[in-house]
Image (cartoon, rainbow, N blue to C red; front, top):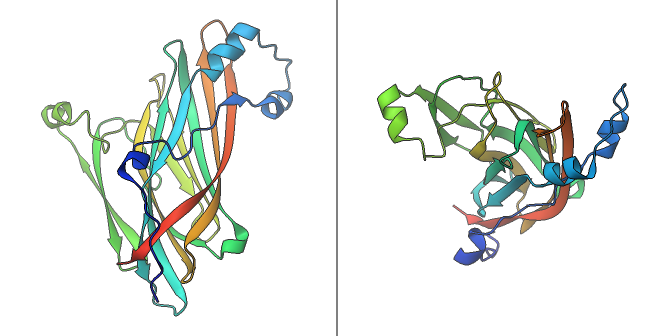
Length: 232
């Protein structure tokens, strides 16, 4: 039985779904072996970085197992550093509420390392998995596609298949600055009667700031809900 879709106005889709204020991760600093002292200027500068997610309603399909649906959920991730800062890495964690009965079946992108532009095509495959195809771009072609979301440089590692939480790590390659502007996709099973899936989002990053030799750890948390449409 299909459930009523959750309407998402076009104006709302243009707004960030999750954009918590990034704070200094004091626990991470306390775990360091050497003492670390951050001036007020460094703290203000470190917080002036943007890490945000935007989402559309999940596409919903009937699963092969009765009583379950499969959701194909796109999340667009943006990590943009302050001009006086550089991201060294950024982590996006989506923790689906345990009581929702959701379980992650596949993620896209999966582990990737590249030092040249690549076009990634992700295809939903029968409720079971994603098919991910990578096509290297020639220098001429990549120059024409630099504004597209599927051209990227950072290394990516992922985990979470078979669990209720998904993790994407973006890591800068060498000394190159890290800039993230990517669409992430999560394939998960949910009970057929669910109209939304509660989720806790944790955004972490490490930034190098002007006037400080080490990397400053940042963290932001926010709760939200994954909106579900009717079955396709």
